Image 1 (spheres, rainbow, N blue to C red):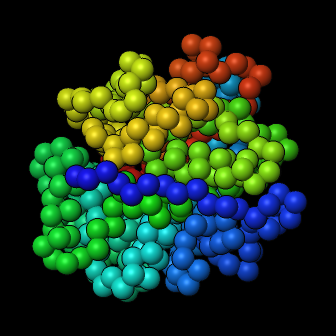
Image 2: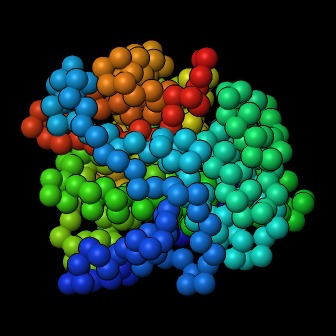
Length: 358
């Protein structure tokens, strides 16, 4: 595949106008941040009310792991149960604006569900390619929105290749959450929310599960643009949590490489981050290093324990892909990367209902 289109910086309203200049609360979903979004002025505002997710303290889980200032942002409260709704709203709006009548997407599950839902909202036909190993609950959700689900045997890259070829053959729009720049523009609203919600006490660390890295890149882009506009923010140290079974970014980070390293992916519970060749991997690595962050590998056993502990201690049920981030945060504290007095925010990116019965 060719390199994805570049992510272009957006000139935000200046800080002298105040935080209110970045928002329009008459709008809903990601479009609340319409003045800060680098999308066409006449783009249709496709929304299901995504974003605007709460931040909560984690007193019991944090105490158990030496993180008394641990916080969680509940991204799984999005309409389809994951953060991918932010990016899907932007991508589907952009494709509809360009005249698309149908879309093709490849996904391990969550992005496919989000694209299927927002395509239905916009009146577009959708065909979603998923790995044959994708949880049945995720496949059922995608199909429930009226999309055609196509299971592909092989690697995550095989799935992407099949989707891209199908889009070309069928003259459909390729709604790739890994490649379309509007997706990161949508996830940028996550970073804008974090900066606005916690501006009185900003997090020192932000821990995210990372496959293709769309959420991490969106957060980094938000902080870069806010700083350029004079808002006086400092980007948290960004930490990418990856499954040990498929960790091309963590391997590259440890080796000092600028691009993801080739890996032999193995099966993992955390299918949402099992991406062997992230399309914007070089940009993710650059963002990690620029923020003073890191990349952490997490085993399935650690993810399973993290999911159980979070549910038992805080009443939060997350999918295994999300649990990878909580296991990584605990590891960062155990190794001294995160100090006890520092605030750490973890993104709960997907609902435990996504992995029901596994």
